[in-house]
Image (cartoon, rainbow, N blue to C red; front, side, top):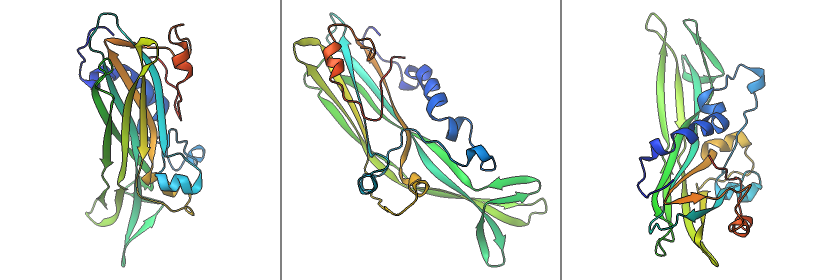
Length: 262
C-alpha cells in the first residue's frame, strides 16, 4: 500500500477476513456442526490458546501465539503505519434443559412442537485492535493491549403451542482474559526494514489438570489468528523474500502461525 492514510479496519480487512472465516471459523460460525451427525462428534479446533496455568500444567494446548514478519518502508515516507487485528472465538456452551416437577434438568435433546433443540457448543467472535503503529518512528516501539472477554449467562424459555413451558436453553460463556503485545524492531544494517512481532497470550486464571480437553474450551481462545495491514510500507514474503530481507526473514520466530501475504 502507498501513502499513510488508513481506512477503517472493517473495510481494510474485509477480503482477508472472508478467507480467514472460511479456513478457520468453519466449524463454529459459518457452518455450525450438528451434534446429531456422527462425523461431528469430534470438533476440530485450530489456533487454540489455553489458560497459561492449564497449559503449563498439562503441556497440551499452548497459551501463547507469536507472529513475526518483516516490513519494508516505502522510499521517501517519513511515516509508515501498521494496523493489527487479532481475532478469536470465545466458546459458549448451550445446554438444553427439560422442565419437570423438581425444576429443570439437562438433556441432550428436547423436541418442542416438532423442533429439536440440542445441547452443543456455540461461539462468539471476538477481536482486539491495535491501530496506527508507526513502524518508521524510532519512538513507537510497540504496545501492550490487555483484553477481557466477559462471561455471561442467557436463558431462553421453550414453550409449546399451548403456552406450557417444556424446557429452556441456557447459554453460558466464561470470562477469558489476556494480552496482545505488538513490538517493532529495527533490522541491523537495513534501515528500511522493520520486524513486527504480535504475541497473543491467554492469562485466564483457570487450571484443572485432570479435566477433559472439551471442559477447558470455555476458558480458551479458539481459532486465534492475526490480520496485519501496512500503509507507507509493504510486507515481505516469508516464502520468497527479497535478497535484502532474506536474513531478517530467516530470523523470524513464529509460534503457532505462519504469515502469508494476502
